[in-house]
View 1 (tube, one colour):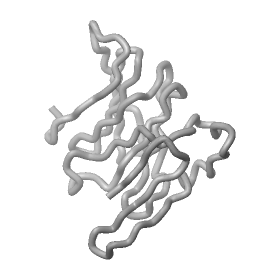
View 2: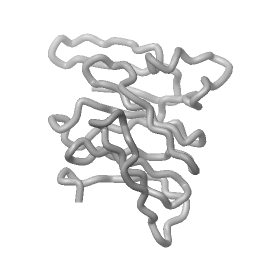
View 3: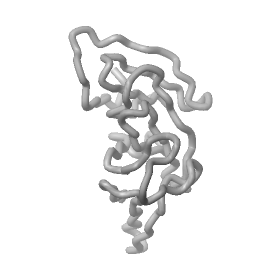
Length: 144
């Protein structure tokens, strides 16, 4: 279980061993300063996203909001696996699909499609006609 909120740290609770571990920040981006954002805008870990089907992915993610970044962490190591950087918008939501696809969306009506197998390469940008200030994204288990 991953427990996160409007803090610079998060908790990982192992149900099998009944142990709670405090993770001091996103390891690999550098630890958070208590007074300022780090260079990628992760001042809060309130925007946590996990795969719908945890057997499908080894990842979970935090969205940074206005900086357009998302930090994707490994569930095993709880450290940064890679960072996704949207070019022209904020990153408000992250969705995990099949075939190692990760989707991000922000307030500019563009959905970014990433391939996690190839160092998080952006493989497509899909315009969402009529959308304005998207705040959440959900992806079906089969990625449709």
